[in-house]
Length: 217
Ligand code: MN
Image 1 (cartoon, rainbow, N blue to C red):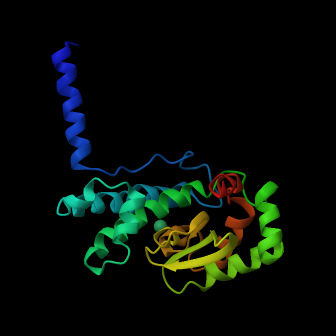
Image 2 (cartoon, rainbow, N blue to C red):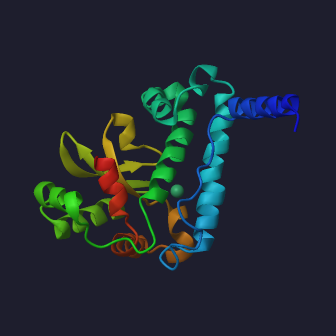
C-alpha cells in the first residue's frame, strides 16, 4: 500500500472516531460462557441490542453537544449527573458504563465466597459473607422497577448500594467494586418474573471477585 493510501486510511479512521467517540466494548467472554445461569439468548439481546443501543444513542446525542464529545466516559457521567438539561446524555452514558462494568462483574465459574482482601473487607465492614449475601440480595430484590445493586467502597468502608434506572454510584464519586443489573431485560428471558432466583444464581455462580479486588486497588 502506498504511503498516501495509508495516510488516507488513517484519516478516515480518525474521522470515524471523532464522529462516534464511544464504542461498544468487547464482551470479556463468549456469549454462551455464562450459560445456563445467563443464556446466550439473553446476552444476545442484552449486549447486542440494549448495550449497543445506549452506545448509539449516546453518540447521536453528542452530535449536538460538542462541549461534551471529547470527555472520557467517566468524566462525561460526572459532568452531566446533576444537570437536568443533560439527562439524555447522562442516562445513555451511564448505561454504557454500567453495562461494561456489569459484564466484567461476572465470569464463568465465578460466584461463592471471595478470598483475599475482599473477604477481609467484607468481614470487617459488612459482618461477614452471610450478612453480605443477605444484604446484597435484599438490595437487588428490593430495587423497585429498573436499576442496579452494587458493592462499593464509600468513605473507606465497603457498602451495598442500589440505584434506579441509569443512575450509578460513579456519578457521586463512589468506588464501584461489582454490580448486578436488575432491569427486567437482564433476566426475563431466563427467569421470567423470578428476580430472586436470578440474584441467587448470580451470587453463587457468576460474581467475579477478581474484578472486585482489582477495583478496590
Ligand atoms: Mn441492562
